Amino acid sequence: MSDASRFTYPPAPPPAERWRTIRFSVHHENIFTVVSLFEGYDNHAIVRTMDPAKGILHVWYCVDAELPVKRLLEWMAGRFPLVVLQESPGMLGIDGDGG
Image (cartoon, rainbow, N blue to C red; front, side, top):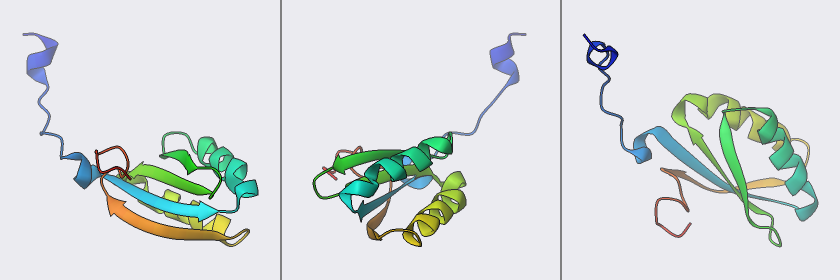
């Protein structure tokens, strides 16, 4: 019996069900801090600067990491201006929606 036949996995849910996007803005001088803090939390989220001049960032995360991601955003918002612009299911800007 091959290893492949011993394991069965349920079908993966569509990306919109397992991923979330938060689009937010910070002052330009805080972009490095935000990116560095998210990089310190390996495998929790992906963060990208979408518009450096406007301080617009996207953070994509799996629903399993929602609590630590939102806690980190709340912690940062208590230390410097951070405005959540949009929360969406799926991967805004990657799913072909133009984000």
